[in-house]
Image (cartoon, rainbow, N blue to C red):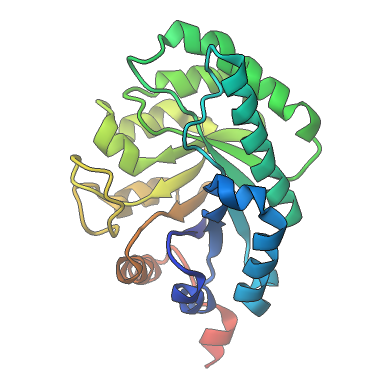
Length: 262
């Protein structure tokens, strides 16, 4: 298991965490269409902000999601969605990232399950056609789904070593009727990435791993020995720091060599 931190704050606030722990960085900046349109400019400023760390840490990209719908019945909306998702993939290539996370984008009671599944698998097959030889992995994330079978069936058509599921445990806790354990058991090998944060089941609040009704340590123990990546999606920097300390004390992450030697 490899651990990343999702950047939900200014870079200067997390530099010390990246220097202290052997963790990667999931960059959320390029989920913004504004940043995607000015990607070269933002990539250069990002490299400057990270300095020497840029070549020392592993990087992932969180792709755009606002207003996008790859299963839409409107082809113009699908075209815009594809344009934005391709932009994020281009950023990942330019930054030598290991993966891109995209939202599945399914909203229950908006589209029927049958209609969604008529369109979405074909979208992803077309999107992936010219990317098979790239090393960048694609993880498709649950958000508002109340059951796991929709992503499960999607994966049944598109899953391979490059394309898999990002299980967001906080989203499951708020939006799903099924437990996180149920989702994990259901997804099985399809789950190759996870977004980890906590809440009380009433709001997608992205709290520290020890604040909320999810037993995050128990969840992580189930995947500790798997070839899987996780990203801590915690908004408050102090709570992120607290969570990393907990993971370190429970042997999920290690200190960087420079820190150890000092």
